[in-house]
Every structure is written in structure tokens, then in C-alpha cells.
Length: 504
Ligand SMILES: Nc1ncnc2c1ncn2[C@@H]1O[C@H](COP(=O)(O)OP(=O)(O)OP(=O)(O)O)[C@@H](O)[C@H]1O
Ligand SMILES: [Mg+2]
Picture 1 (cartoon, helix red, strand yellow):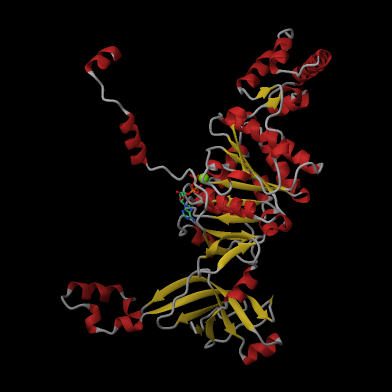
Picture 2 (cartoon, helix red, strand yellow):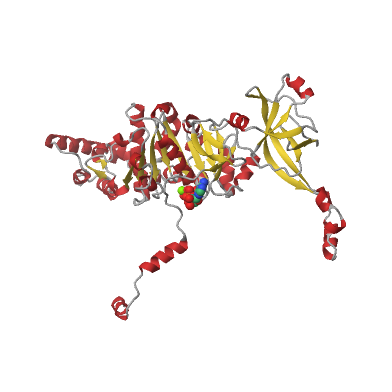
């Protein structure tokens, strides 16, 4: 027994109740507890069973300490307050709970009648916790519940099919969590249904999967930014206007003719179209600034004779990491735009397996308010967000700035894992974007520690606090400033006077 339900003006109700914690008992926020239905409640609810509730808030009270004047007076005297009064004996802990429902014969139904003041409150058995929260036995193991050591395993379809958003401030453990999710996806047995995983990795955080010591190195292909190539044959007028939204209608018409001409010439000579040839042809055009536009495109250094890699590297149970760390922001977006689009089209035609596209720093790739030249990849991510679920094209959007993330994309995510967030604007935005998050859970987000998160939405039946498990891959863990400084100094050769002269 954990404690006894108390009565106050508003509770117990069919939604909430409070109880006073028994001596030497401990509960934590997010923990499930139960109340056996009293006889009156049983007859009102018309069946035997128990009320299952979740701990939302914990407070401590002591009437002895209610009067500031007396505490102030006693603190001036040599005699302590507690030697004069049995103050400690009068401290008590109140637990505020939200009712999840009546748990009867393995099912949770609406609670039709409140528990009674004086009813005893008990711990919930692990099997009931799993059933109530919707934790499965053969899903993706994220870690354990924060309130107990019960493993938190979520169903793959519930977590990913209608897209997942992983939100949290810098250092809260988002990439670590996504590493864990990817490990779980790569570990799956073929007959349990395997997804392909593709990561757009702007900082090289996922290179650890291909490390010689990684258990997943055989299943991983890391594509470095400088090895990525897009065939210039794709650069039709409609694609060029997607890539360069400022392209005028006149320039587009002219380019359309130019492209057809170069395409035919290349076909006759039996060679692939290159950007250089398109640029050379554009010098003839004097009416529009086509050559400037194509010069700008060539600065990206992404267009060549062939596509590399091809989408055939996307395979069930395998991981492809696009390590974009050495590309500039615009080039990163172009890669996301081109490969995201191609991947989705191929998936729609059934040529690629169902996949999860992890978009790290999603606010860079799908920014809510961005100038047109900085929103190249946004329409692609938004269209996968809108239509992907039907085709098994799932998004995992990872962001430390949800406020800056496209609301179209975010609103299509039905599962959220929210790690620590303290910025009030981001918190408010999360509250507005995640259906199913209440004020208490929102407040708890600011108290989470790195590696702790709340699973909200489709993935579980109720918001679930989780401690994410350790990962088995080596990651680009946060490098300490003093280690960087030491590394620099160890490499710095002491200067000789002649070096100084040479420098001067
Ligand atoms: N569940 C966990 N267990 C152990 N260590 C963790 C856990 N989660 C995060 N960490 C550690 O905390 C640090 C920060 O985590 P991580 O890089 O995942 O944060 P992040 O939210 O992705 O930050 P950023 O937004 O800056 O990319 C890392 O060193 C990571 O190893
Ligand atoms: Mg990260």
C-alpha cells in the first residue's frame, strides 16, 4: 500500500484524486498506481476492477512551517524550532494523480465514478503497466521507464508509421536516442519486418555505425559529402526552378529549349549530359541571366555525369548515412532535396523498401520561415510528411529548435519523443504541436536530465517517461573544450627565433 486518498474541494473526481503517501513509501512522477474499486464505485461502474492513475505532481506540506513570522522569530533565538515543537512528525507528502481509466479484465475503460476518500492506493503490477501504457514485448527497446526499471519497448509501426519527431535542447540526448532507435531497427529479424534507414547527418554524428568496432559496420554505408553526385541529366527546367526558386518564367522557357538541345546533342554523341555543357550553351543566351544561374549551381559542386550513390544502396535492415559535414548549408539542402525526392518517388513505385528517413537538425532542412533560396528541401520533407504514411515512407525529424521547424511537417508527426527543453518559446510550441501533452508533462520537460525523455502521441497510450538505454555504437560524443585545447597545444611546435623573424 502506498497511501490513502484524501478529500478536498475538487477531488476525488472521475479525472483526478490526491493521496497522502504512507511512511517510508516512495513514488515518482509518471509512475502508475491503482485503487481497488470500493463497493459503491463497483456498483456504479457496474463491474469489479481497479482504477489506474498516473502520478502527475508531488508536494510536501507541514503546518508548523506555514507562519513566516514564527519561523523568523525562532531563527533569531538560540533554541531551534524543532527542539520546541514536534514539527518533523507533522510533515506529509501529497501525490496528485490523473485517472487513466478503469482496468477491468485486461482492458482500460472510461472511469465513470470517482474513488472514495480513504481508499487505499497501491503499486501497479508490471504486466498492468505494460498493458495500460501500450508497451509491447517485441518492439524497439528504447530504455526503461523513468519511474521503474521496466523495459520500455515500443511498437515499430506505432512509433514510426505516422512519423516521429525527436525534440529537445542541445545536449539533451536526441542523437543518442536516434542512434538507439537505429540500432534497434538494424537488429530486427527479416521475418519481423525490416525497414531501410537513411540518415541526413549534417554534423557526422552517425559515422560510429561504420567504425571497425561497431556491431553494425556490415549493415552500414557512410556516403561522404564529396562523394555525392547528381546527374546533370536530371536538371530539366522544372527541376532547375525547384532548385533556384528565383528563376524567372522567361529564363525557365529559355532554359527548357537549351536543355532539350544539349540533351539531343549528347544523345547523338552517346555521352552523358554535364553541367559544363549546359553552362557553355547558356553563354549564347543574352536575354536572361541563365549562365549566372547555372554558374551558381555549379558552385555547389554536386552535379556530375551520373547519380552517386544510386537508390539501390537502400536495403531492408541496412543503414545509409549521408555525412554532409563537409558541405555548405545550401549543398546540404540540395542533397536532402534530391535524394529525399528520389527516395520517395522510388518508394511510391515500389522500387525501394519501406524506409525511415532520419533528418538531423530538421530545422535546417525544413525551416518554417526561410527565404526561398534556403527552403530547397522543405517541400520534399513536407510532402513525405503529408503523404508518406500510405507508402511506408517514414520521417524521423530531429530538432533542437522546434519553433523554427516547418509546422506542416511537425503537425504531421503523430509520435513525439521530447527530451529536456528549457526555452519557453520552444516549450509553448511543443505544447501546441503535441496533442496529448498536458500542463504537468510540459512542466516536467524542463526537469528532465540528458538521456531522459517523454514518449507522447501514437507510440504509447499515455505520455511515458523513459530513460534511454546506452548505445552500442561509438558516437561523436561531445568533445570537451579542455581536451580540444590540450590536443592543439600537444601539436603546436615551439617557435624558434628564426620562425618569428620569418613570420614577421
Ligand atoms: N541515454 C544516455 N545515456 C548515456 N549518455 C547519454 C544519453 N543520452 C545522451 N548522452 C550523452 O549526452 C551527450 C549529448 O547527447 P547528444 O549528442 O545525443 O545530444 P543532442 O541532443 O543530440 O545535442 P545536439 O542538439 O547538440 O546535437 C553525449 O555525450 C551523449 O553520449
Ligand atoms: Mg545531436
